[in-house]
Length: 71
Image (cartoon, rainbow, N blue to C red; front, side, top):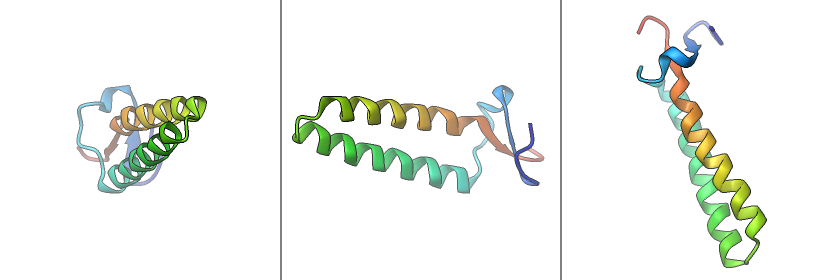
């Protein structure tokens, strides 16, 4: 499935190189989740920590499904 002129997404693209803009978004999401999870653990808010652990893991996994066209 094509999401833009330069990027496709799909199950068959897991091992293809990830575009730089998608990598930056995914890395920023993981960094945010690490920060919020650390804060939630220190403040003893377990439900918030669990939610952001799941979001960070899913975001890191899902960024692998994007690839540039022509690859």
